[in-house]
Length: 218
Image (spheres, rainbow, N blue to C red):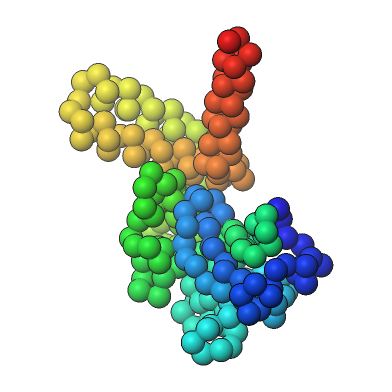
């Protein structure tokens, strides 16, 4: 369930000496970024600042993630599990989540099948930064500046390139053209204020509908 600030005291703080484990998940990709701990004060500070604040068991004090490095965690939502003794913090990282410089504390790429979606989340953040700041020499910023119609035209061109590569080109060309298509599609979606998560949600809903229809026909 989504945790409200007013419900902080109702959590099961007594189970682990006033601390609760906080699993941090990328708010867009779903990748697990890190595990830390929160006490009541850290959780209240997180709500107040909108950025993840944890309790350091070694230093015995609060610490805001990225306070020194700038690699903060902008919190989207906080969830408590069914027993009220574990927190799930959904956040958008501003840079690597791990102090070693990797995207997660579990390595360069999230384990298992989640890493492609995790990278899409990272790429959307990079695109957002290009659109917001328009750095000199940025192809993404120039593309966006020409408007949605131009980006849509580029998506159409790249889709044709993918189709031609599938019929006439070797595998590496198909992969390269597909990467071009997906990049331009992400720019188009971000330009319209949407992301790949909305596309995934639509596909998930369609799959669920098919599953329900299949079950009803049995």
